[in-house]
Length: 77
Image 1 (spheres, rainbow, N blue to C red):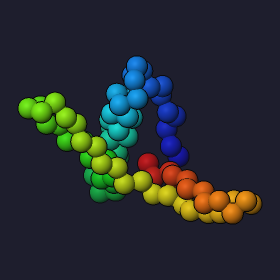
Image 2 (image 1 turned 60 degrees about the vertical axis):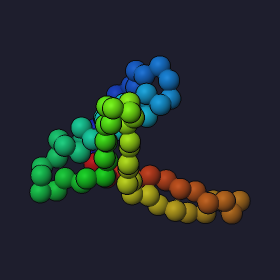
Image 3 (image 1 turned 30 degrees about the vertical axis):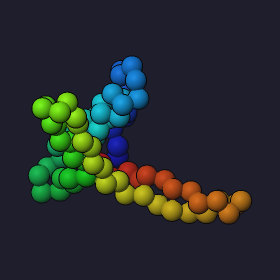
Image 4 (image 1 turned 45 degrees about the horizontal axis):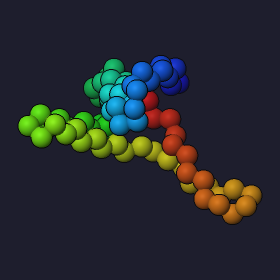
């Protein structure tokens, strides 16, 4: 069962994205090493002042009543 999501406190969207990635990575690291996923990668380049985020999230794909594709991230932690 997933832990409850805590609020994001960042004041703009790029900072909120980084904050969310850090929260997901922290949740991953709290799991036992034998079963820990490695779906979130955060790389800091302090020289250029850039952070690179990579996320691999399990998803399901379905079609709604109107024939539109629905993509839903599924729980993995």
